[in-house]
Length: 104
Length: 361
Image 1: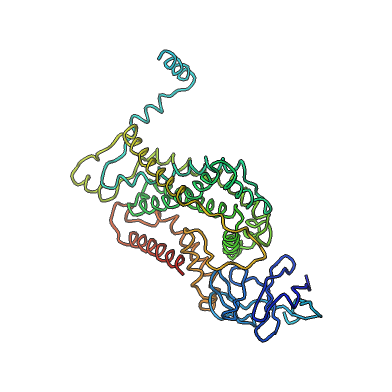
Image 2: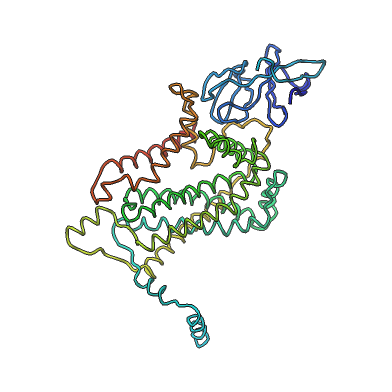
């Protein structure tokens, strides 16, 4: 799996997130309050639970063991041993395309 | 009368009941202040029988595929006559069974009933508890609901983080890299075929060893009797102790009936592999202490992976518990030692406090 259409621009309001299918694995697409698009592999690096975006804290959170990440995928608190794997996001027209980051 | 006498004769001519009768006539149970603790193993066995009976009934309707599992359990709970009650009894009884098994284990531990010659009885018992926990873990996934899905994901991931065999173990448990329909089918096979086969084997061994060595007496009582040169007071197993045990089972059944009828087991929401783990997610209460520990260990401890460290600590504790009769030399020589009771108190304190923490946090 290299790239998928994760959502339409109109699907996500500012400061919200949603899970999308990246092949057989879940991805997390976030539209920040500033309007920037971010996407990550939604599997928590601790024990592989599916993370979620919390609009009230503007952070990514894993409910299983209370791990939190910032919007660059870096660990803020909790047991995750490493950051979330980040994807590359491109907007083409109304479509939000997510692909494996060239940096990864 | 004539017919029943004839029937008995017919059987006795074809099967020799004399050794069994002889055994039951001579089997006795020691009487002392801790005698009621002897009921705990029997109650656990009784609850296991209930699990077998209700499990067989659930099998008539349950379907182990991701498309049908949740719906089939919902059907059992809403359309099958008394289906809700059978499922509720199965779930409650599973939890009570694990609870009584823990009580049985700790009472055995604190009375140091594992001392010579009952080391193997203890070891088969520890294996049985492990199998019961595996039953609980595999059965938890079968309704294919959200909580169970993530609990399985985390649980199998923990197993997968074991050094060396971890990844292979994860593949065996999941039937692939992820928790999918293959995992559900596999867990169903574990739950209704593989684990029952293992359990019957170890239960048979455990019961056989208990029959061979009889009930252990607390070290303190044994020494007091020795000093006074007295023989222990005993109760005939059949029918005296057996009837008392039946009353304990009857009380257990009453508790189970009340819980199952008044607090029917919830089904939750259908598992969605592409949904985030919901807030408030936690495993069954008997895995809460481990769950809370994994939550509290930082990602890295002194340069070592925190999760790996946790798994290593659990494995080491399990191994220690298994071989404790071989390590506790003082009680093997009928001497007192503060070390092993202190370890037991620490284990209970850790399990209780971390379980409470895991529940409220």
